[in-house]
Length: 110
Length: 115
Image (cartoon, rainbow over all chains, first blue to last red; front, side, top):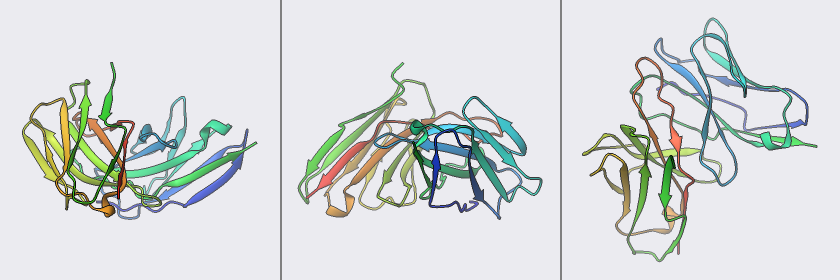
């Protein structure tokens, strides 16, 4: 299983863009990169998934460089409701033992 | 479509007592998982199941047992609760996806306090 490293916490203000970088130096050829978001007292929920280059959806963008040893989750124009813990996961199909790690606590202030 | 539900939402146990946590999903997912979450430690996989009648150990299985008698249900049992099992327990489910990593759908969690 590829291990991931991400910052423990990040602070931001409303309206700013938040970028969270996840390092995964040992990522395997078949591995995908997935990000989850967890609000207090709730279970994590899927945000975005990618394999290479850039993926964008209505919530976030995911940037993956050519070597795939890191990835960056970008949250555009955050609001107070984006305060949450964000987890970076690396794995592949049938990879059941995914490690969520401690995640990155993002705090958005007014 | 309720998604993933967990019962109970909160429970207090005394050391040595037993209990069963129930997870149910109505999405016809093949895979189900039990995690525990402790402060500052993210989620750790306890047990998982890749189909009805099958279970396997995760990262921290000691002190827990599981059963998957029906596809939609995944039970987590504590035979003799210990204070170290005080935690928030999350259940999740997913379906097989060729080539892509499965997306897990999580329940709301069960808070367990063992005194």
